[in-house]
Figure 1 (cartoon, rainbow, N blue to C red):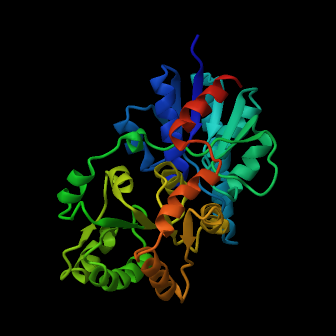
Figure 2: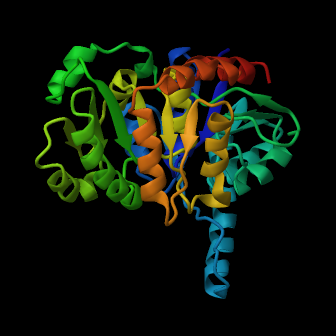
Amino acid sequence: MNKRFLIASGGTGGHFYPGLALGKELKRQGLAVLFIVRKNDPAAQVLEAHKLRYREIDFTGLPRSVNPLRHIRFMYKFCKSLWETRRIIKEFRPDAAVGTGGYISFPLIFTAHFSGIKTAVHDSNARLGLANKVCGKFADLFMLGLPVDKKIKNGILTSTPIRHEFADMPDRTAVLEGLGLDPAKRTALIFGGSQGAKGLNSACAEIIKTLASATASSWQFIHITGERWFGVIREEYAQLDNVAVLPYSHEIYALMRTADLAVCRSGASTLAELIYCRLPAVLVPFPYAAANHQYYNAKILTNARCARLVKEDKYLKQNLFDTLHRLTGKNKDLLLMRSAYSRLHIPNPMTAAKEIVKRLKNL
C-alpha cells in the first residue's frame, strides 16, 4: 500500500516553496499527500492551482509583545490548532509528517510525534528558525538546505528543492528580445522578492542609471521592482533603452538562466536557485530577517567566492556601486565566481525533492 504524507507549509516563500516542490514530487510518484496551512494563507491558492489537497488550521505565531490579551489569544489558538491537527491525523492516517519551517509546522510535528507517527523537518536557512529549533526535538529526520554551524540531531544536508522549470534551458535570444534587449550584451538581473524591496530598489535605480550609460555598449539590465514600486522605478529609467523594468515575473527561472549577474536578497529559496544556475550574484540581505538569517545565508556563497555581499546600511549605495562597477568592468571576476560554485559541495537543488522523498519513504 502506498504511503501517505502530511506536510505543514506556508507563510513566507522560503517556508512554502520547498514544501510545494516536495508535495509535487510525492504526487508525481503516486503517493498520497495532504498539506496543512494556516487559515486564510495565500499559499492555499497556489496549492489549488497545482491540484494539491490541503486543510486549514486556525493558528498564529508567538506574540512578540507583552500584551496579555495577545498571549491569551495565542494560547487559545495553540490548543485549538492541536485539536484540529489531531483530527486531521486521525482522518488522513499519514505514515509520516513533514514540517518546512514557520510556526505552522509545530502543531503537526508535535501532535504526530506523540501519535507515534514518523516526523521530519526541513530548514532552508543557515540559521535555524525558532519553530524548527523546537520541532527538531521531536523529529526523526532533520533536513538542512544550507550548512549550519552546529551539529543537528538526525541532521542531513539535502539542499532546498526548487521548481522543475529551472531545469529548462531558455532561448536566450527570445527571452531578451521579448524584453526589448540585445542578446549580444551581458545582462544583469535585479530583483528583491515578490513584494519588491524599497531600499534595494531605490539604490539600484540610481546606480544603474549611471552604469547603464557607462556600459551601454556591453551591458544591459533587467530590474524587477515588485508591483508597489513599478511606476516610480520605471520613471527613473525613462531615458534608457538598455534597461527593462518589470513589476513581477512568473518566469524568473528563464531570466536567471539567461542573466550573467544577479543583484538580489539572500533568502534560502533564492540561494538554491542561484546555486543550481551557478549564477554570480551580489547579495543584499534583508536586514530585518529573523535572527539575521539572510546575512548568514549570504555568507555561505560569499565565503566560497560565488557571490559578493553588500549590507543594506547607510553605505549601501556607495558599496553597491563600487561592487557593480567592478563586476561590469573588464575583468575575470564573473567567470571565477561562476566556477567557484563547485566548492560549495551542496547537493543539487533540482534533485533535492526526489532525494527527500526517498528518505521519507524509508523513515
